[in-house]
Length: 93
Image 1: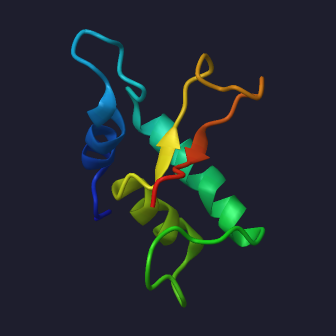
Image 2: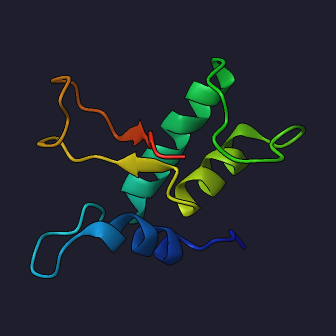
């Protein structure tokens, strides 16, 4: 079983959405795409945003980053670069 669960991750991602607004993530697919993209970034050499990441798989680190709200999934309207980015690293640490 995956810990945290998809539903827990969806709650974390949608926690900043104001009541009445459309949630950022409404399916497990979005969670899977965002974590896989972040895992590829980690494999390419990006720094991990969580502690004790040595020896862990990149996907596990990406899931933990998402669970701790260290990365943010962005919808197409929020993307300032004009690309279809799934996530952006949180600059607050």
